[in-house]
Amino acid sequence: MRIRQVAHNQAWRKTRTRLLRCNRAGFTLIELLVVIIIIGLLAALVGPKLFGRVGKGKQAAAQAQIELFGAALDNFRLDVGRYPTSDEGLRSLLTNPGAVGNWDGPYLKKQEVPVDPWGHAYVYKSPGEHGDYDILSYGGDGVGGGDGENQDVVSWQGIKRGGAGERVE
Image 1: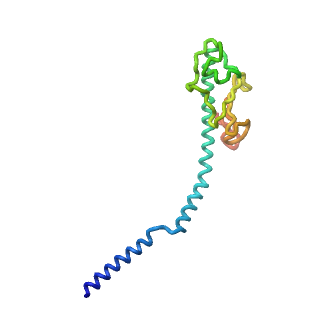
Image 2: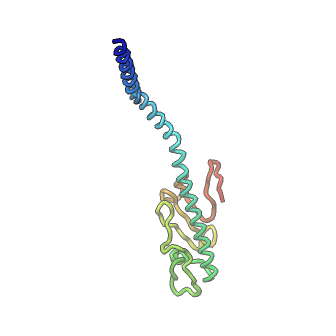
Image 3: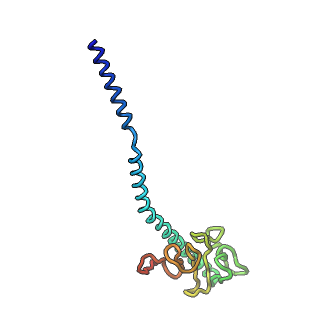
């Protein structure tokens, strides 16, 4: 009888231990809410900083594209002897704008004139107000002026970076 009682006690202890483990296996609702709140706070603090860099990346891409247009325009000028007029536009870097002698294009690799990172067409003026030609993108808003992502990106100066009006060439 003693053996049966010992075996019964051991079986009861194992069952009780399993039940206690099962009850502690999950997380409480409070613990889950605390974790969700912490993740939300981290996202609120880090998110805006990351999204700000996206705008700066678009401005840098627009500046690089404008510099590539400048190189293509210089090649056009070497071949033809002049820059394309405002009426001929950047399209003349892809197709001969008429009876232009010595045109040896296309001067761009793409089949179409690229648009700026915000989906707007680049503005080309020749003769320009700031040099032989002016190329500009009106930024995210598509309107002249603006700050941040809406800042104009132009061929005659670099991108404004800091709060002190500093421009990067």
